[in-house]
Length: 382
Ligand SMILES: Nc1ccn([C@@H]2O[C@H](COP(=O)(O)OP(=O)(O)OP(=O)(O)O)[C@@H](O)[C@H]2O)c(=O)n1
Ligand SMILES: C[C@](O)(CO)[C@H](O)COP(=O)(O)O
Image 1 (cartoon, rainbow, N blue to C red):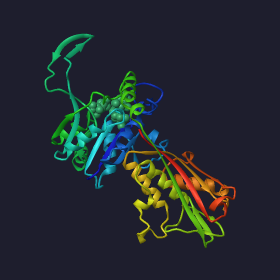
Image 2 (image 1 turned 90 degrees about the vertical axis):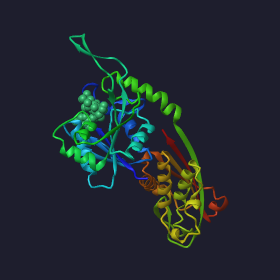
Image 3 (image 1 turned 30 degrees about the vertical axis):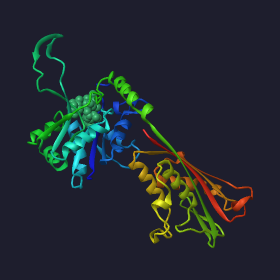
Image 4 (image 1 turned 90 degrees about the horizontal axis):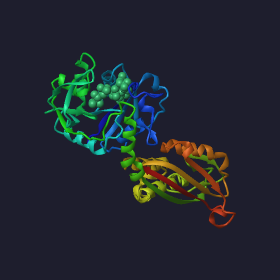
């Protein structure tokens, strides 16, 4: 299946919503508006790239996040979209979804509906038929009626064949209401897919309360999926002058034996994530019978587990690892190990714990025959 790209336009200043900061940065149901919106696309299995268009004043403060490419916005929504499209120009992306950051309540099904329509059409966008009577007003009085037949309220994400909408934007002389208007000006046929009443655009101050109600009703409180997994691994000592632990080479008068680099810490963490996903263990994904993994650096196993979790929509909330050995002493290397695990997994270092204990000279670890590792992983699908 070809993955689509999503452009999230977030370079507006939210003047109508008011508040101390532009609306995308304001809190909503426990997170920021922008976090809700981004996450909808980040966890969607058919979205492969996300381009986030930020106001130039906000770009420097944005902390890099894996899978999110940032671009500076322009003076109008259309200019911001254009910058996002230019960023994708020449890529192998076939379809692009263009979405307002200010619409954080869209569903996964809406993204699917737009993408499904794009299988046979060059452009598709969600909209709801107007159901209320429409008036023209003047000075607070009704001045006339407007026929509502055939009228729709346009929403985003609006989806397009990338090359077609890029050409349409490049040919368009100035701002437009939305990308559908620009597509139509270029002669593109745009299909309407049913929009969602809950997919409101936060525009004015009271819209925050409505969006909050929607997210809380159908959101994390009811649907959050939390998984816990544990992992346990042991490797015996053999000849050598260092041991690999959590990707860090620790000097020691012995080495650890194993099919791979015998990094017992990374193996336990990997199994904890597989365990949380009910996806077996390292042996299932990387059989020791396969020569390919002989001597392999164990970060590839951990990366695989993290990617598997992400593909199922899970974020790793935290990782906790205990190494059991008399020697080498882990304390001097614990910080480097935490940082190494954080780097491999993309989990913030303050959510990674690496600690150690001896077994009071009891058992195989006490006799210094090998090292054991016990890990716990918590995974969350919001
Ligand atoms: N120069 C701009 C203007 C708007 N937008 C984005 O376009 C979307 C729809 O615009 P709107 O709701 O009008 O947002 P704001 O421009 O932020 O609001 P306001 O008009 O009230 O200032 C928003 O996601 C907004 O961040 C943008 O990326 N670049
Ligand atoms: C694109 C849009 O969300 C479709 O309804 C809308 O036109 C953008 O809102 P704006 O207030 O006109 O920027």
